[in-house]
Length: 199
Image (cartoon, rainbow, N blue to C red; front, side, top):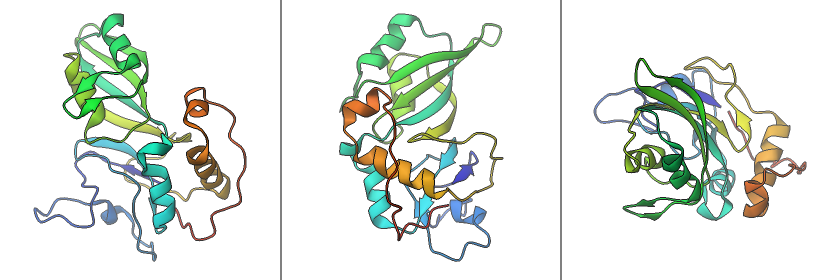
């Protein structure tokens, strides 16, 4: 798990010479790659692995693995605007699945808000586009949770190994029924995926 800083590419290389996530993996002998993506301007929790089956399980759209972000947005969205995100909103690539949203902070002096949003998809720049659709563009975006794994106090640019229990929980969550995820059901233990080497 890496706390990806803003201004870092989720890629193996960059022709423009910008920083990439592997720059933060000093001492890691395995060749690992990101599970999903965080765009250049987004920071926060990024899982990396050398196990393609594990990565596919967590990122395939049918598995609906939840990802939670703290989005700092311009203005203060009214409840009706947030309700659109909760029920699904039309983007240029189709209707989104329902999201979970709640206010975390409101700064009336700066005319901005921090909204917690949990999505169950992984479309390109999805959270940013959802807030743009309700006319409250994102000025800062940080992923704080992936499938129940929390970023917590991991410092920006640092990594830590996931525990076997965390990997078990991710696998079990991805394999559970989507409706149970929406209800945040209990996560059962699972036999550890033997080939998974996760950071």
